[in-house]
Image 1 (cartoon, helix red, strand yellow):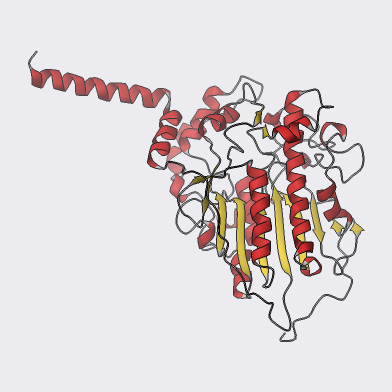
Image 2 (cartoon, rainbow, N blue to C red):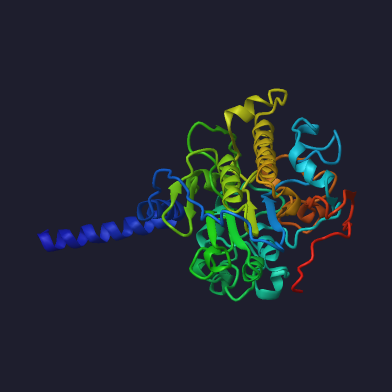
Length: 416
């Protein structure tokens, strides 16, 4: 065979090999291509915009801090007593509990959807996501194929409906529509400085990102999940769960600041977000602030710091212990935010809201996280949509268990 023929044969072999590889491991190829096209830089300092040196005289609207956990079970926090919480109360959550104890604890709090993307869209817009065509969590089509391929057999198998592929929008189109008005856009027009920290998961393309949806500053990651720390973390993979397997393969601890290049957080992600929230509060202590702090804890993959893992030595099961350590870090972060508000002298003029995007997931293999309710994330039983919902506003919202009660001395804007 002469060189033209050999070259043609090699090209054909290369095409067939690439086709076979794509058929066999498409997600792995996509991950590799993304890493090559968008390398993650080393950690770097984040410089928040500094507000005025002194507050303006006269009326100042209240700060709003919206803290959202990710896949937290309704029974993961100890606000309801010693028998609630991870491992039967072995993981105390005093800081999260204090938001409920010092304000309003809405004991029948519900998410607007049972999965994260549409639930977060509802939080941002105040509308049911079904009304604007955003009912389902945004995932690439290859991921939708990947999960059923590796899912273990069971009475309710995960299905991929190939006949509906033509109806699925591209990943670039998956997100909260840009024409939706967010709370950040509304508050920005009223003079607030708006900050997003943490998970977004409402679209990754121009027009859907937080910088395009009313946030002056944004620090976090755009997809639905991230690793907490690539090295030195205590890990607990979930054998047999295809989604967990995918996250260990594809996720990183990469974050972006104001849509810039991705870089490593440089420390355990929950602690990083808490630290940056404290810095953002300090930078904006003299102007009205809306802070959307969207932790990804305790969403999979299960990773904890050794410090938190060692503190829960009474929990024998490793997976439960790692999960409990993640909840412990989340609670510590809430405490740091509350402490920062007091240290900056703005605690009394700040409304703090704590909630969650949906119920705990079944694939976590932790049977009591939604106790006593039936169902899991992704279902519309109580376990899938019942979430903690607490509002704390010292001097403005009285400590009431089970409902809202204003004290009657909320500040008035003299111009209204």
